[in-house]
Length: 76
Image (cartoon, rainbow, N blue to C red; front, side):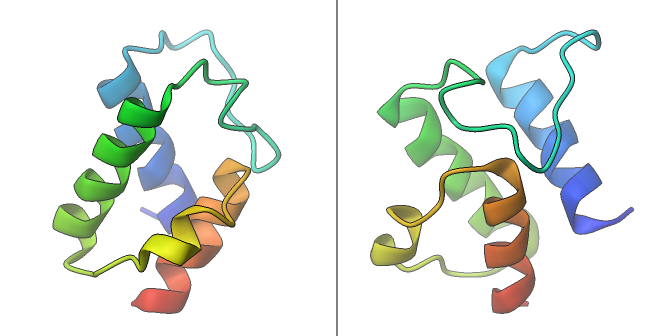
């Protein structure tokens, strides 16, 4: 499974999104209706899933799901 697709699965599980909600690389955090706690928890999930450490300053630069995938891939 590609990084982007896996991130989509994790987002659906963590945020309780139904299968009808379309996630693209341009989907923003706001589109997902995620608050700051959701985002922080999601980044912890990514760190555990991929065995990476995401620098705090990088979290602030992420605006779309595509940005998240690129960040994760850059840390692998």
